[in-house]
Image (tube, rainbow, N blue to C red; front, top):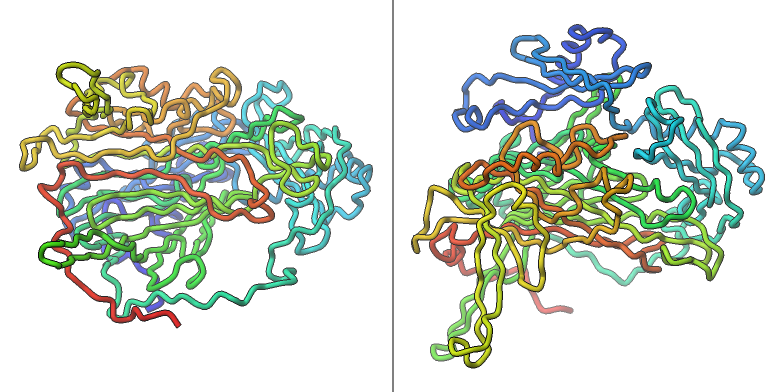
Length: 636
């Protein structure tokens, strides 16, 4: 077996097959005005109603529908079409005249080529003594919405530039400061070239590529992960079963990896989970750097940038892979081999107790199920890791690595907005702010969210020794009341309770969301980037389920004005008590670069946990078997 899996039994949540993607595109091309010339932004499964999913039995006929976003390069706007694959027709065609499609991966190199062919840009390079344009690197960035008159009505990209000293050299070690351009993506026209920099290009060698490394250490011996009896999980198409867990794995161009219908011991916990947005604002007001504020999910589509993972490199042990098939802008198929990785990891001690009277010791080992994928967005890599634990905990972790974005500075004079990581190379302070969309279903769809804070009792007759403190729960009854910030001083967390089921003690069964990686935003809320990133100003949002409210910064993010998204969703202030709830958790990384982050950045991490609270009647891991790992030995 090669570690990949095939679709055997079509389920309502199975991602679109290759044939279905091509069929959906053909239906749209024949069903909308000027469809034959349309570009295709994304094709994704139109997920059916929850009632349809829950009533499905293996072998039942499945009604298949798709969302197709189509656009024309000679006109602004996006057609969002719902397509029936079962009936072979367009069910709806809604045109969004002000929407801009995402920037496609193929356009990255087209933007670079357009800039490098512009005489103004060539002259600016020559002024710096850079005559070989093959060694100049131009990175496209989404341009945001800064009210520039010349950009209105166009789909544009802003660019930043670097240099390679040689073919395999590290470009981000040689930033070309003050040289930027703006490009109309659809026409290829270079609207503007700005040449404002006189800081010399740093030329020091700081390579990490094994082809040019001069020293490779030899003191580390192999570590092998061996499962001689095979793995403990089963994968049938996109259905994963492990321990008491069961869920379906999805994938789409925008969000990448998605998880569906997650249950443990036959009881639902989450209906759908994904990382629905990522915003990366940079903190420098200098030059054109204020435009460095990207929404990597909504403006590019993180799924389109996912790597093909390599056995024995990205994950160790007995690995199962799932491929992902997407469309390109011309409507052709693109398959990402080994896009999703599944494997188990040992996690040390699960629980242990030594009874000193009986002189007995009980120890049980923990393990977790890992579902992961890695995407490359320009200079950064983002590893998405969903963990299922034996005790019912669901954990998500981002591992950010790759290369920090750089600009140039005068050696020894980095200024206040970054850190000089090597002489003349500046890493700017920035943040990575993610939004997890968690469609809660704790023992069913009817849930209530409560906020939990711990407070000390005031000293007095009932607290004579000043040691009393208690946890107080507050029901968050409406959407605006549930737009919340974390608070370390009270060890705040949020609990999602079943409205229908209670545990052994009579309390509602529940899961709690623990905010372990909150980020304080420093953008001005009324600034051009702050308006578009409104979701970042709260650590928790809770909304009543609406299938059309899918993304925290809005459905169409590229060039958006900030009027769509979570702040607009909660304006209705809908009731949240005993309702079908969606939790949106904002978390991330506040990154002040270090010299140790260059020339390649070791993984830095962030994430969150969902833990059962009264969901089980007692410890659900006390029945784990006692084992001794016979492969363990004394070190030699």
